[in-house]
Image (cartoon, rainbow, N blue to C red; front, top):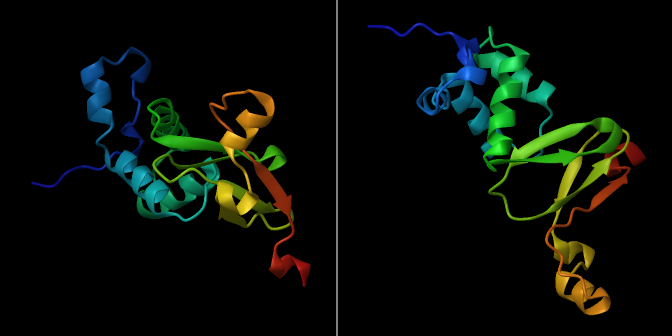
Length: 149
């Protein structure tokens, strides 16, 4: 017995779907592929990049399907949105250790940085300001070694 693939089945009627239907949507091939891509890529991906990668394996998948999957994963706290100003939002798996990015303003290449790489310390910020930092995000933009040539 062979299964019929319907890559765009994510979210059909999702606005009125019951919790049990949403549970079923999470297990589609497209959703599993999006999760796999986000867990394995070493850099944040845009929705467009995710859609292109998904369509390599599931060619009939609609952009809106990938958008709904990523939006749901973000709402569930499984995916983190990284906003890169004019380059738009990128998404990465939320279970990665906390980090920041330095992004090439010319080609878009990104490299992960840890707080220690930046000399950042929430404890030092609290000592200097009295603030209890609940979240921080540091965005650095520059020109990568390849684009400097």
